[in-house]
Image (tube, rainbow, N blue to C red; front, side):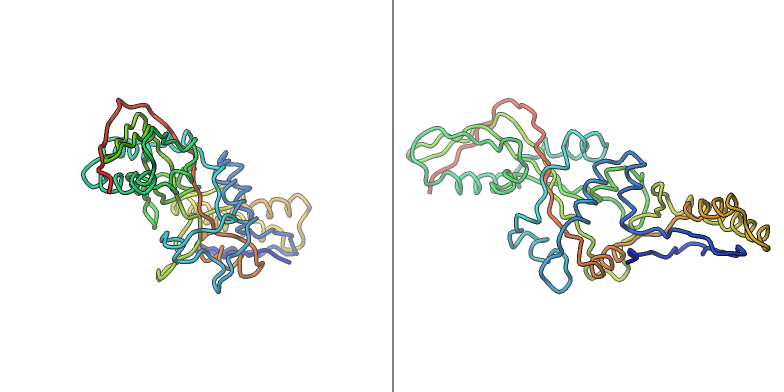
Length: 312
């Protein structure tokens, strides 16, 4: 069965060759291989995880609104926490800038009520003693306890900015900050002493457009990678001219070498990929599972900070 094939929104192909040629049409499932060629291993691994996944048991087959908005737990089979590493994330400028913002804001005025709520929820009924607060490098464990502050890392939906692996892998995502240390429980109060901060990524990996009128564009792709609209359009126009010339020179038949040239030219054509193409793939093949991802935790030591809470 043929895979989901996308049609180009750019200049269409003009196959005027005088005989049949075996042109392989680009499919959304070819994107991980293109990512491999671009040396984007993290992006490729995440997308392969999606293709290998199982649709959700609902009408759309995608992650539900409640799970996306974190009002209902995500089943374990739809959670991934091994692919994305913070050392990789923080190589990119925008996440590192966001980390610096969170470093300054982890216990600001808006965060303090959250910190108190989460410490009291975890230790409010504990007997007197000293208890460690540690998440063993797991972003999912920190999320379960409750993050202290968060910032969104966003990219423009309709292009603009650099096409790099971070954007190809995660697009928009959340960066969280938590603190580890020790909780000292006394009869009437609790003192949390934080001595290191931890940062991690939380994201929904899905291809749903929700109520958007236009399906979100995910770039112009071919077998070798992704390009911006100007580069893709220019290359497609050049390919049209090349294939038309091949057709004119082969009106009475094409040699094997000419047929190969025709196929190679066709394979360089770029196609606009949108969320809807992945939705169509899932509907056609009953494969493709949206999932929630967590990175590991990136730590940094800080001067001890004491936060005192009154037991209720």
